Amino acid sequence: MNCLFQLGFVLAFATAASTLAAQDSAKDVVEVVFTQDMDQADLDSIQQAMKPLGVDLQINNTKFEAGLLHTIDFSITTGTGDGSARGQIRPDRKFGFICSPKGGTQFAVVAGELGPAPAPSLVSQDNPKELVEVVFTQDMDQADLDSIQLAVKPLGVDLQINSTEYEDGLLHTLDFSIATSKGNGTAKGDIQPDRKFGFRYYPNGGGKFAVSVGRLDPPSR
Image (cartoon, rainbow, N blue to C red):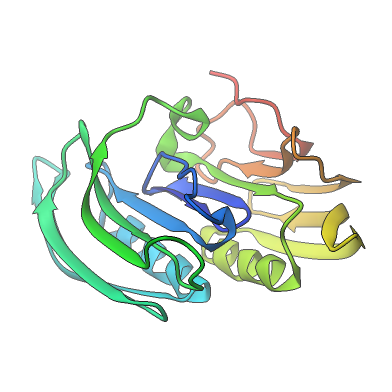
């Protein structure tokens, strides 16, 4: 499972490896790209993670060849629009959906082929099936933090927000802790637009570390 969502935060886990540069408001954009190495458990986890974000994802049919996801038929329902698509999963093309569950962008729902696959990102440098990453940003409000807590719980991460400080309506300081089966961590720091602050977790032990919290540097290969 390797997914990357942008909802004012970046939540990366096993179903897509691309950050969407939101056209109007990154806070309202969710992107999922299906990849060949996903199995049924990955698809189930994506469905669970989408619900708190206001996206009802239904997997209508799948076809696997040689253990790889070959074809998928899916549909999504959101508060701003619906969409469905059926197609082949190819390593050189992005296939999935982009939506704006809260509105506020130039589109509501795009489903199907999303364009060429991006170059490898931070999420895919080590092992994209084993990385959960959350980066907190200044434009997040309490509702966003609550959504993150719900979204990471099915991924084996118990996230607790201990305290927050806002200045001029922007998230300025965050104190949080996480508990996982591989380890725990706590961090408190300022939220800055030019620095990544949050946590990274490898649930299957695929990286050189299991849990990293606080200021995040690129993962080691």
